[in-house]
Amino acid sequence: MKLDGIKVLDLSWFLPGPYLTTALCDHGATVIKVEPPGEGDPGRHIRPMDERTSVFFRNMARGKRSIVLDLKTDAGRAELRQLADQADVLVESFRPGVAARFGIGYEALRRSNPGLVYCSISAFGQDGAYPGRAAHDLALEAMTGVLSLTLGDDGRPAVPGIPIADVVSGLQGLSGVLMALLRRASTGRGDRIDMSMHEALMAACANVVGAPFTDGTQPDVKTQRTTGGAAFYRLYDTADGRQLALAGQEMKFVRNLLDALGRPELAPLCERPGAHQKPVMEFLAGTFRSKPLAHWMAWLPTLDICWGPVNTLPEAIADANLAARAAIVTDERGRKHFAPVVRFQEEPARPLYREPLLGEHDGQGWG
Figure 1 (cartoon, rainbow, N blue to C red):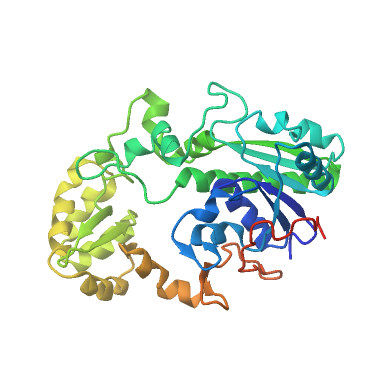
Figure 2 (figure 1 turned 90 degrees about the vertical axis):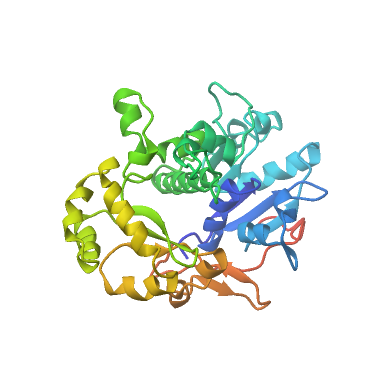
């Protein structure tokens, strides 16, 4: 596999760091998860539980090894440094300054291992205006303005269904680690990656910052092309209380649907977003509300348009395309897992769908 022989120390908890290191592990890296004594990674106990641990934890720890180290002790820090001397990558999610106080910061570890790629993931970065400030995903979604664009029918911000700041920063961290490893191949030198979740999520707003960047104003959510101001990028109710999404604003898709519904004269209104699209929205709302979701799921695939049903998670997991691509697999215990998303033709991933018990690999080192 692509990352056979790469050794990774994972000192991260919850989602961003473990998401990153799971991807490395799925593609061949050896990942040692360092956990504190006692209950270990808090993710082990996020319900619902599923046989050995929690579903959350096994999604974030499959294939990894677990060792227990008390980094508040000299012995624990000494063992960590020994492991780091042989590691290619270290990922940590302590508050800024904590790793350095423990004697396991980048400057300390690179003296004996100059090839180490050291990735620190924190809420606001290793320096800046908020030194040491804690934050999880929702606070960052609030601070970056993401929540100001995610409004319910009552006009108030709605809590998104997934922790997008966690996922985006994990993916950005993964790209940084891989770039650093690629560069190390020619220089022999590692690097320090300072991954700010705040900045990662802010940069993910690239397609919605036109007004703030040009005149310093807040976008009007109800008139923007991807947040409510376009008839063909919008949710619609169906007769049975379900919903579907139209999600393609290209004029060919607009004409395909409106022609099929007998209202081609409405198409010119969709050439740009804004309040003038209200007649199109009202027509589509009335049309979709006239029949149940099952009817539209049978009819819409006959047209070339972008659309999708608003699925529940069980419905989404049972999707025919995911089944056809084996995107969700079942292990020998009957537990479901997501297959690796990155697919290589020549060297496919070989994930191990088994999470480690706490301290299962104590004393084994990299062997």
